[in-house]
Image (tube, rainbow, N blue to C red; front, side, top):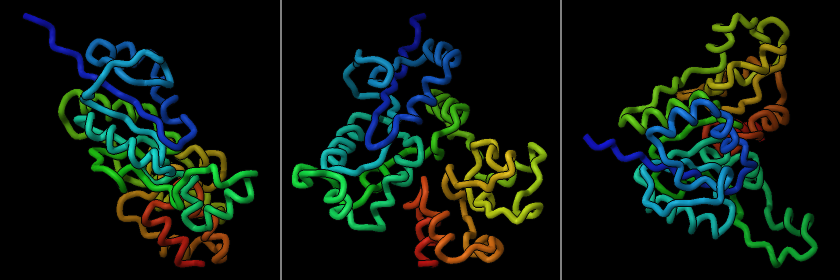
Length: 255
């Protein structure tokens, strides 16, 4: 019997720092196992060798911040049977989405000697604002084990098993005392998607919201108990996932 053809995987970079792509390379031994069923056909972070599409699965890192980005993501979608966005930039616009609350032309005038040469958009937006997305994997950067689960799921035509509970559940599982209750430390854990392993609370620091809002969060309730003033609440919600709907709405409510 002939061996089954390998599935093809493409990895694409838009406006980002490359951290989520590196999470794929960090799989190391697991990648060797995947190689038996998966051909990495496009991954410029790892190799200049490429194979023409279409591709069974595309992983997309980065947000849309330029007219060229907006054009290119449509081409990526057209050649991808499944498109998965990875990381805060691709799922929520990333840290660069802070431009959405300011004047990008003022920024370019301040930074560049000849701003007329800069071609950029007024906003930084997630991939889903431009093309249909099959699955979004949160994180800044993403959890490599969750990434492995997502790839495995699409190789086997099933839905990824990535739990949608909050960081608070991870704190309970590792036996970490709640920093809000014990120390009065402001923490976004109750409204943030799990995946990091609750690293910051384990070191007596509040959660920064790196994995974006969990499903059905309640920021208004958390704001009441945080003890923070309006200007500080605006600041804590405007970091890696500033443009994610629940975090954006929460920050705007305190302006």
